[in-house]
Length: 299
Image (cartoon, rainbow, N blue to C red):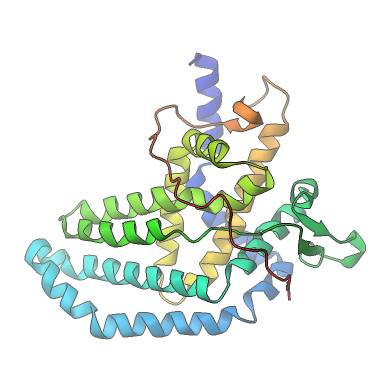
């Protein structure tokens, strides 16, 4: 790699660290009121359900896990059992998200942010957009012209989550390893909608994930940490979708720059902003044909 290219990549990564985007999504969602109606309706009842699930887990599963982990972790058993129980709750709640079709709302959040940030042309490739006279970005969202999925349900991801749980038994480093591995798998799924808007197939998706492998890992890890906060996992799922869209906005700005300015352009116009030393084993279990499109209801 040429030194100038390495410096450009380094500067871009420092200015736009991927782990910040889930946090930026919180600020963006909070300060843009047109997104707030998407939090109401079906999501508030589901938030109560998530609190109920966590209450059950901490009532019946927490103390037994503390006792078991104390064999390996000693005084750290309380902390590690808390993270383990929250992780179990996050997995259960994720299944509920699919059951209650919350993914539709995540698509609306993602698309509304892109439209509000000037990427109407990108969203318009897969969705009808109403006139600007309709009002804010959310109200401009029409029906999708094809299947619209924010993050496809992955059986493999759930299985791996369960398989990785025993890593929490390793004293000291077990919990961080568990979070990083889970984030490594979950991170790229937050850009599934982006890949669809770009018209990517499986081959292009894998190439894009490989180029941003470490950045997706950090994004997914921070997103997972937010999901572990009791009672707020629903809210942070929405704000993470907003943060994912903000990352797309930066990627699209970089794609639009003339060659030689800013970051280096990768294949198919994708922005190559991450180190070459990334893992080859990128998630490829998500289906090429996502679930059928939904009936639009943007509140």
